[in-house]
Length: 380
Image 1 (tube, rainbow, N blue to C red):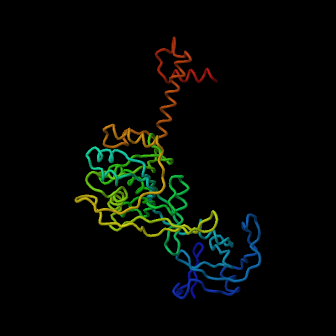
Image 2: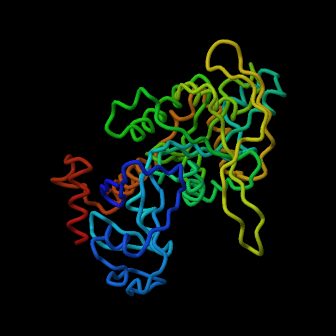
Image 3: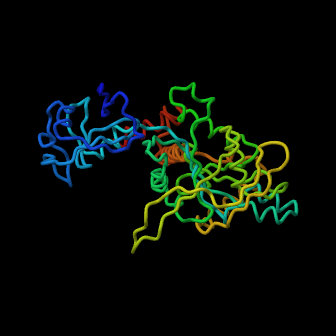
């Protein structure tokens, strides 16, 4: 056989994974491929301590990430570029083949009603207001190691660590959209990063959804400058009774160009005690009718009422306050946390300057910046 090595893989002409994804090899063949480097001569982190890999027994060729890896006892692999044996877990980490994916995670926010609901109520369409509600949403992109099965279950834990409000496992009405960057964004050096920025802008201008930027805690009076957290409502609950998830699905289908895009649910078995089984993405169990971003109103999307995502009374009151401003987009009345902090610091500085009597005499017309610098010098 013709043998060629590349990175952590060894390639054999004519050897296909169709004959099996694991092929036993003899010690002599394994050491020949490894250039005579024995696993016991290599040190690695094992069970929290640095130690030699020790005596090894069964050598195998394992098919992973599009190539054959030389492994031993299913705990170490040979890195042909480094000419060393390393723990097998590293083959699924820094040496793994990765793909970029966009995600949109959502949880129901049943107690939150913004401008769209207020307009429906004012128009006398109580049923539309009742079905509108809102979703708390986080969007972003993630580098994912390509598993042989093609699943992306690891993204569940990644999303849930971002915010206490994004607990989506075994939560009715909560889920994830996972998709690749649209073909139109493949021209960019980082397609998913570019698509993430485009999606944030598109949702702010979408005719399907009404977006209110928020923060990781679900704030209404302030929001993250990255625009990755938001509340999403159906933009026209008075004309159609589909709910925010149907509207969001329609907006994402338009952006991705995928008419079959559907959300996924995060499920886990009960497990034992406080532990649960492995978290897995599964097809959405709701009833989804045909959606369109333009033209006739979308058909109804059957979604269950949310059981989580409590919204505080203060946040709810803030939402109603924005609904009464007359602004077509509540986002126009918000400021990011960074901007609010900056404005607050400037206000405090002006107040301290005035109270400290610095603005007087030759500094009287110098403006707030010189006054603040003078106050700083005095304090030092």
